[in-house]
Length: 426
Image 1: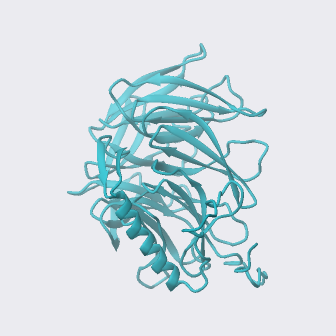
Image 2: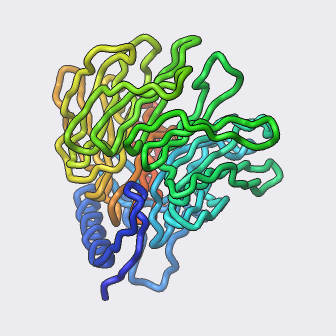
């Protein structure tokens, strides 16, 4: 029997009928099995075809097959409901570990707290259609600390405040009629003013500035129209007392730098190509005044490396990878025990999380770390496992799962003993 499911695609904002889902997941499962066979030290997949209940990541660590030297664990299984955006934030002040968030096709913002390999889901809001954008910042003077802001297909901008005693305060602070919220960027965008600002990017290119109105609410003012859909954006390191630049990739084939100026949103195009851009990642460790390194994905499967300075000049363009069509996730960080190795990870419609790495003076190489059960949509870097000296990856997409990928314990930690028989689990 072929399943049939209606999904609201978070990139395009249109209803897409997906057929053959059972067959597609079967092929993905076969790919995972082949990957597991090729990885002699990979943990076995959860048992299937028995009367045993499925393993619950809220009760125990659930291992999935991964490449040698890597571990994959399940954070949440959302069933048939795709999870479009993932990342980390600090939602619960009583917990020490960063939390993971997931935005799904039903309009839910799910916060997941960690406890020794287990992940407890907290459901905060259900907006009725996909959510795709999230920012955490101190925008509301009436709330102590930072708030969470989320938006999506219905054009509602929602404020979520975790309460110390448990539960959440949730309210809609703005409605953008007939518009979809695809991207949010927050921070000290106007250093001459007090507090932070939040920019809202809609699917038609309108950009709104959110500021407190002094009466417990917020004002939304139109500050620009890019005539392009911003699919991902990130703040660049900020010079002292300077307005920060925002790097963004657009569906219309532009990579742009944006800045909130005195007369509205300033725009500078650093790359324009005849193919839509989908994701970007900023190489960490760049100091103010240094050249920045951006990695960006094109919808046809190219991953590019751009290096340059916001103040002007041509950005150097380098092809890093000619991979599968439809890359929908990109993350950079330290994913190799040698910190001198340049690394960036990509995920997309192939269902494969792949690591691109380049040692100093050498060429780029690609390695498959993990194969999900359906198409990928988002990838984020995080520090969630202190048993290694490297960063972790968080992946999500059409498969309805959030998966955490980490290097094996001891990676990058010289002289530290590790479990001598990790395959023996209760």
